[in-house]
Image 1 (spheres, rainbow, N blue to C red):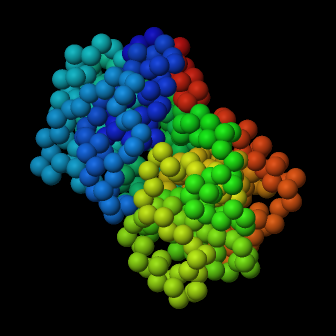
Image 2 (cartoon, rainbow, N blue to C red):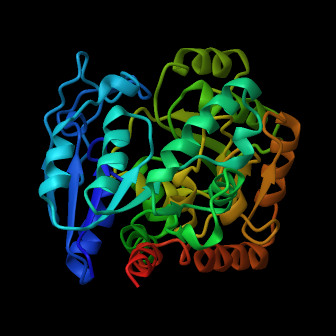
Length: 390
């Protein structure tokens, strides 16, 4: 088959294990091209509001290269022109015909790659996150203009790699035919998380993290930002009549002070743990310690990979109806539930319902979660890529 080239903005902790898996366990000849090295320098992450340097290997186990970023203000955070890597054109011109997978269209380099890839004989594939349900919530005029622009860009693409149902519906709404759509699900390194689930007990994980051995643990994992709506969960937790329950909120960000004020005013000290930034090597233990996982994000949460992570530990997952992943990963009453975004009382009731489940129902929920998440793995991505060349 043709070689495969991924174009990414920067090394990403969720993608690097995928590239390692493809290079080490498949016949695919893979190279990853990066537009920026910000994520490996330990720079300030604007969402977390702190310096972040991931403690899992981001560049080992696969072939990669970095292009010179010639933007006036180079940064992955500086919008469309923050990544301007004209070297991608020369690279594609010299590269033998390959399957070129471009992640989205957010930066100038992405557009250059899509167009140049088409004219230099590559099979151009676009993989993005945009969910259809969120497009319906945006400004209609701006969305119309964006879609006109995208319809033009899409003329240069051969295939569209969709990550889930809502993403597929987005492409179809723009006229992309079924035979150009390839399922490559958004997923995490299931094997890494499953190993900890199978070898570490819940009590052992809680001891390691300094959490109470008994009682219920409700888990949130994400940045403390408006998009993630962490205050919704705090408010829902304050309505719970659960004396032994604690809420653990893994993350950090701009809303931390406001969250601390809420905790103080509502006498929740000792009942809520704000962990600060937690790196990849430690975060699995929080999932192992939890009884239920909540993602309450609003507009902008195109998928929500922490739900994938939680399901590798058999956790019931409670997800807002805005999150893209809810339409794929959550089977109502089977492994979790979807609630109306911003509905605090409903969220509180749903959490209570899952905490009150009998041991038999909790075991069934756990097995259902593991079974579902097995269908969202690197294996399915590889099958999708192999299908492009068939």
